[in-house]
Length: 124
Image (cartoon, rainbow, N blue to C red):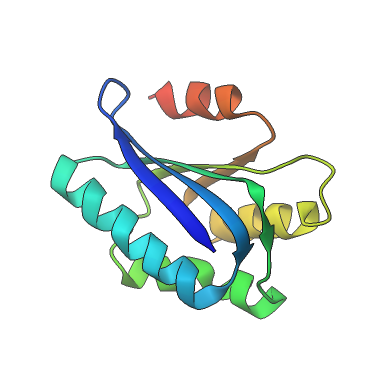
């Protein structure tokens, strides 16, 4: 799994784009880097673009992701828009994650279009 992280100053959003197969250990390293940048910049909005990635996480790993990222410092009040490729073999993984995150009190939503994701992040 590879990723690129950047801070979009005008939008106050940390954006990360992933490529390859998303597995747990690299995902957690990426999440730690994303949260460190967000802390430096005072950001609490995230655009996570997995549209060019394949999910290699088990159902249990997906279920436990919210606990793992919360331990890294992600506040439940932070907004995360997750972009995926609609119709991909991993679509059910994304919808499962969204349900789990929202049921855990996180403001995480999935989107098939990055523009829709940014529009949602821009809303108060």
